[in-house]
Image (cartoon, rainbow, N blue to C red; front, side, top):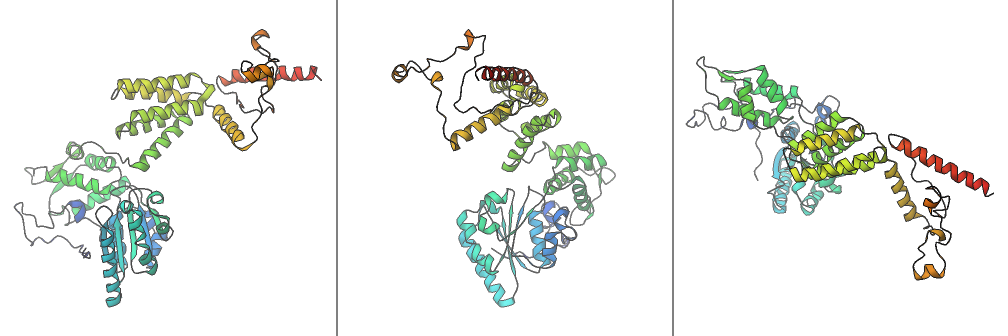
Amino acid sequence: MDELQFNFGAANSSGNSGADGRSGSERMPLAARMRPRSLEEYCGQSHILGPGKLLRRAIDADNFSSIILSGPPGVGKTSLAELIALSTDAAFIRLSGVTSTVADIRNEIASAKTRRYNSGRKTILFVDEIHRFNRAQQDSLLPDVESGVVRLIGATTFNPQFYVVNALMSRSLSFQLEPLSEADIKKLITNALHDERGFGRLKIELTDEALDFFAEVCEGDGRRSLNALEMAVLSTPVGEDGVIHVGKSVAEESVQKKIVNYDDDAHYDTASAFIKSMRGSDPDAAIYYLAKMLHAGEDIRFIARRMVILASEDIGNADPRAITLATSVMQAVEFVGMPEARIILAQGVTYLATAPKSNASYLAINEALSDVKNNRVQPIPFALRDPHSAGGKANKHGADYIYPHETGGFAVQDYMAVPKKYYNVPGVGYEAKIKERLDYFDQLRRSAAGENK
């Protein structure tokens, strides 16, 4: 793999031209032509590159061994890696986590050793999609990262804690890149319209509505925004006034369907926010996350299952109808399917979000399971044991059992050898009535205990 030669100058109009009159460099995608030429031109990520921030200090001091950059597509991971190499006067070698092999890694490391021996120049080995490297490939980097033969910069769209081996993570500075803000996207687009590397030689009128649309719809993905701008410009004929007019309708056609970032992390993060919004009694937030999941193509059965769980875990007997409604939603959406299933899910979500909340049943079973697992298992009182088995008949099991229906629906008797309260009812919603009943039963037990003294 060849060493990347940095050439951030404007496209050379005198180069070989194609039939459309554009040179070879001008026919490169706009996003590639508009890569930043310095850290000052780099757009976004001020939380790690701003004055005094750790990554900026490490670059300025030229003091780091390896870096892991994570974040969604189109936020500048590759561009940042190139600029780090440029800022530290290092050779920049790029490998792909998809196509590169251990042999490729060894070849590049051998070249880095030769380069360091001949010229003393450092080498940055950039591995795009490092999460696609298996453990053996990642482990093969360790000795030369530790010895300083190469400086590793890995890029991934996934959480590196789960996809990069611990040995590499412990030797790396790890930084999360965030989606670009709307202001950042607008800056990228404006620069592309005026810079000669972009469309600076063309007369283009981009309306404010179109600019706002690009900035909002591209989900913080700089590459996607520039691709959409390029499609809009190159597919729009020059007007009679010699100007390419790009309005909102052209922008909408250039972007088509809005694509929501929904990788593995986003899937779990969105599901978590969805559940927590219903638990927190915010129907508006819950509906928003439902809409995001549906737009991204989430499995409606997954959504419905999470609702059934929440109905029991977080609502419970505060509203006993919640579990029935959630189960009905789960059955109905599978029967009906999309797009109408969205209505059924929305009804269920708004009901669950606004229902009274109680996790008393959830806490009760968890505590009881812990006692069964960690403490001595309680013997079952003789009165509750089965009287019909051979042993039960011989030992007169159940002989002292009091049948509650013969004593007004409640009987004072020992149901556990060592009584303990697991179901602690907070008295919310329907559980307020349950609490009244339990308090009454406790009063009867205390009265009976007093009479038996």
